[in-house]
Image (cartoon, rainbow, N blue to C red; front, top):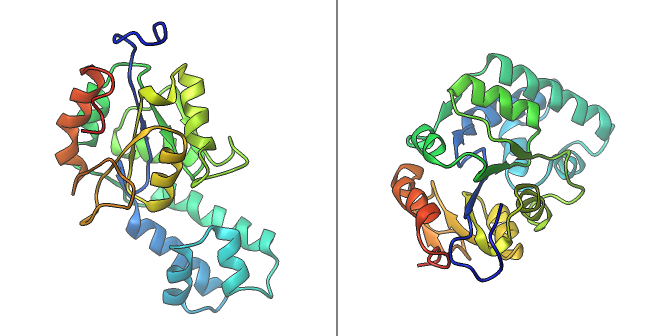
Length: 222
């Protein structure tokens, strides 16, 4: 719960992206798309290059325009579900310490993936699961729309100004900024345009995130 407007003791919240931010899933995503491409006799490198910058349906339209998009999506979902069951996942260094160190009810996950896959990956990596997960099925507009982050804040009972977004990708950064939240970038050599603060790794950001949750409101963008 938040305190009254303008009070300095309002609770602060942290909203996390998942893939690329808390969990390193790059090799898994590449393997899934390579297998998908092989099933259709397509060039795996080209498919993955397109998939990195577009949503699945847009990827299908570019690389497999002659195929039924619903069939393409069904195969992709089957491959992703199998990868959650059998793939090897790694949490970024510092993720467990960070999530276990946050106050209960003070953080959420905001992902373009689906909740059952997130739960499967967290179970495989030993990460705690929060009460609030906003996934692809929860919103009609995904990142870079502000809707996913605004929904997470609403479900936590938080004001956007009291939320810190942790992201690794440009679309997620734009989503958080458009939601009126403070956005910190992690796990990239260079800062994503628009972030209020940049860290080369999640591990580097951990003490600052924990300090932010207990510090005076309004200090996040320093």
